[in-house]
Length: 452
Image 1 (cartoon, rainbow, N blue to C red):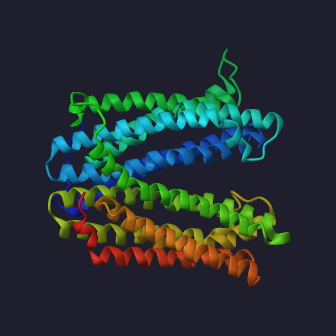
Image 2 (cartoon, helix red, strand yellow):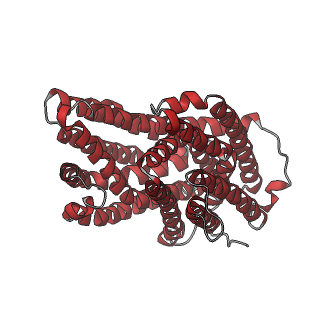
């Protein structure tokens, strides 16, 4: 299979934006579908299995953070090299990213297996459920290296503007995962299935298949020479990737830790704590649908910014950033409006208890007011990441979270007595600050002069 290489540094900016965005939106949808299928199948096996899958997924996400962070640094370096026409530099950065990712994955796999019992103990599971969680985690851990290769391969394809290759790879990974979820768990014809283990095994097989597909796509694209170069770690390139990546790793850890603190604050609301926590969980699941296009535009923006800076076209990069952010705000607002209007009916899909349902409705209607600012933050943040300004992105989001959202949530919910409403309002205020601060940093333009 070959993929036509599109020049993202010339021609219509809207055409370039569309080329990068539509494929990434589908990729995000595939990822969402796989996660939804895992939870659905687990739910058919019982609430205990669903709890195990949810916990191991969250634990696994923390381990995947390193790959996601490396992928952001990889996109910044490779897109800049591609935009400058430096094919050799792009190939070298791609090799180093794959090597660095493989080393990190092997180290994390060994650590995960070694400290499996301590990690599983964090959930407080006991008896048989704890053993099931341990089995899940071991299977996921063994699939970590292929998963890292898939993530970083897709980052390389994306940085080169070949988003169709990413789409092809993730389409097959998702289809394999979803089909095997049902087949391995429940069986078919003479095969009776292997029960809950099938959920983890489906993910592992899909990732191994995805790794093979990505290696095949390398052979049949502009990256075919990646295998003919020197495969040895370069201290200079690894240092560059690390310096671009660590702020993103810190950001993702900080964001997930912040959500844990939100749950902790909600748990302090006495008789309304369980209702509030359940509403927060349900609301996040529904809200995730709106995040899909924003994240797709975030990833597209990083590539377009990087390539245009590499081509010495910073003004074009800035125009693209404003066009993407404004169109993203409009699109996300159009998605948020029906959720605001029909929050009652939509909430009933995720929240069955009447009190949880009522609180989920309130959560959604309040949070929909902040979605345009969320889109601004994500899309312009993608531009800054593509330019290599990962520290700036991290500082804005971490500040909004730990200086505004969490202290204000505690003050309003616990100290002032507004309960869950206080937490929802604090989340809106912090997201508005985050969107405005990201806009101001992008507008100042210092990102145009970041040296990689």
